[in-house]
Length: 271
Length: 329
Ligand SMILES: Nc1ncnc2c1ncn2[C@@H]1O[C@H](COP(=O)(O)OP(=O)(O)OP(=O)(O)O)[C@@H](O)[C@H]1O
Ligand SMILES: [Mg+2]
Image (cartoon, rainbow over all chains, first blue to last red; front, top):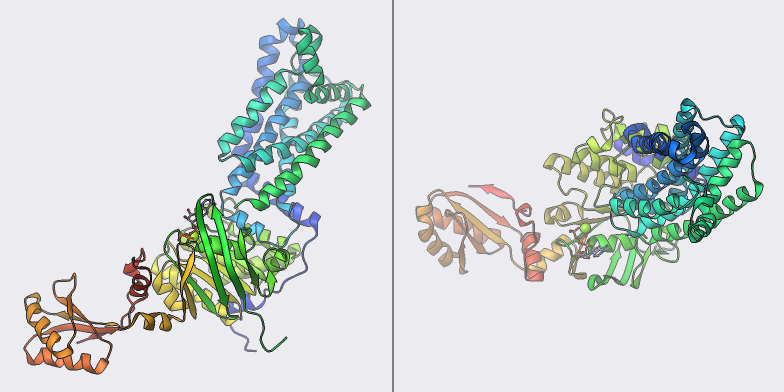
């Protein structure tokens, strides 16, 4: 063999194939890709942080007095709900991002690699969980500044945030499915918000369901988001309700079990 | 290894329909190993769809294909280990830097972190991208993007590489760089399936060509065979003075005994003939008649003419198809 000085030929000659990466490693690599995008375009986090701030301020100061007698009492009630709302809205972006990705040529390359097939999607959701954590942190910090005092302390607050993030990861699979079904990123965004808004307003985020008409109360109490909010309030108040937590985790698991395989299927079939 | 290894690609009766469109309508291909195989066709011929089926990205609706001996549907994972794809849209991540793109792929192919980084550095240097390594790809020029795309395709040297219109939109210099890369790849033993709408690109690079139109292979062979199948080439003459053209037409018609066509250029004519000696005699005859010749050329038929003859309609980008050797008079 001639040892050529030409770097092109040298590079071609030294491209030996290593063993395939493990599933976990491939997922982490895709998670890293998500982080890099946040690093390069930090502005995209504005959406994630501004909306919850607005909601928290608006509801506390505009409606707090009317709904709970005083803004400080209402904040105590509202904050866990706003935490849930903010993180769940953020999970819509997982579907939007995937939809945008699909229009780019790079997806073809990912799909033509010999890797574990769900890895690009699992990795993306993993990377997105960093956004969820960020949205959660913003809400909690702002709450603390405004006077929110969690009885559950640091551990209760962190556990509450973790529960909400886990649920959001489950819900994200619904939006990734939508993201691969609809044509444009804005269609994904709109349908995601259209679906979430009624579910969040018809939950116990803003008001105690006891005050609602009977039919509405039944709906609100059955709404999984109400269960998530109750579990989150419990954890933050230091009165964790194991039953609610298990229920929430079961819903997240069920969403993942149904929609993750569906997303993977659609991703492989796309093209 | 048997003495007759399977071809790099063997496709028979491939079909893909999108709604009412039969994008690929029964394509048969047999691509030998170790060469560049050109797939030539105009917009919408079904080139990309064919390549995507062969690269396991699309499932065929009919027919079957084996790539390096492995079925593209049943053994898709094995095929993915052996091939690499440079798509028509650059298959790189616009929102990452060039270096990050290559590290990402290195990791996904199984390199450890340090090795992935070293490989990225090596490839960036080899493709003259070291200066742009830290810039986001969306700010790259078309030529840089294509080079990165090719670098990404050889993070692990593939046994077979699919290239879908790798030079569309590039200037001549970038195009030549891409051609050099393709030649280097083939020199290392990689088989390249090259889709293109440029007749001169297929002529420059490909050892064999399949011409496809409306989802079907309408001709196959070496560039020379395809040209020969169309018959004679053309003898082009350009006069110094356009006013001499009627006279020149008479002289050439008498000398070559063939119909003479005036060209769009008011000083140029062409005659269907491919015998160099007779062409030279015709030039002398013009000189004897006192008609001054600016230049003349004897060309094989260009692939553009081949395309026209095969399909009855011209390929889109005919102006890049000039393959004649100019002979100054
Ligand atoms: N995903 C798709 N959905 C619907 N129609 C499609 C799809 N992909 C391709 N087609 C249609 O199939 C036909 C062949 O397209 P293809 O992209 O394979 O052509 P091509 O030879 O690569 O053309 P070009 O030179 O423009 O890239 C076209 O009529 C195209 O509109
Ligand atoms: Mg194409």
